[in-house]
Length: 350
Image (cartoon, rainbow, N blue to C red):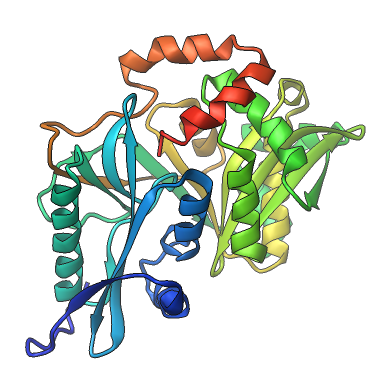
């Protein structure tokens, strides 16, 4: 990051209000490090869907926004007490136009973390800040430029994975962009139950569609008129990020997931999307292998922590042995029960 600081100009930190949404959005859109997860819309989503306290901080110099840091406070008996940029998001952290603004925002976040008495402050950086904070080396992301020619993209998929895509095509699968979230939620809720994860409330997905508008859509995959898979994707500048995806067991034999991501890629390249962001995976997980099989290269994510009450980096993830019994029990729940109580637990995950 190149510093453009003039020492005599004071940098102040403010909290975002609705009057500044447009300025915030423009700063994020224009910033080379900006992501979909830095957008001001997340403030409304997190507040309305989960009732969290949010602190969307921005730095300002001479009336101009010079940096942003969206934060949410998640407090749970089961999963701990954290201040995170941003809950339920995979990227976050400070984005700023100069070093002084970045440092001022980071210091403000640390003071807030101390005041709230959290276990830790978590910044989900795509690039390291080099501040010497403890880092969690658990996650990677997969991003790749795609061609505007669908055939070139298909040929770029390694042979074995390309064969899976063709099996889905030959099985007669079809995809459609749908309105609303009900069809998607039926598939997604069953999928996450099978993984041993509580499903988030339907209201959360409805708010994502409502607040982000055309920058959020749902692609459903059907076989003989029956929904077998679905994915909710986010769009930012010329990038797409398929974020919430799920399928029913029938999709496995039909290669429904393989077809779904190919269908999304095909549609995106035709509308001029340049970057396909396959998103975050834990190193060594099944999704990690799946994305590598598409010819994507893992890029490490740099989750950095300012420790307050915790002496070590928090381990709120399925790899933590203390959650394994819970996961196995959740997988055995009837879907109706999992869907009834899951949203109450999921809101505490962050």
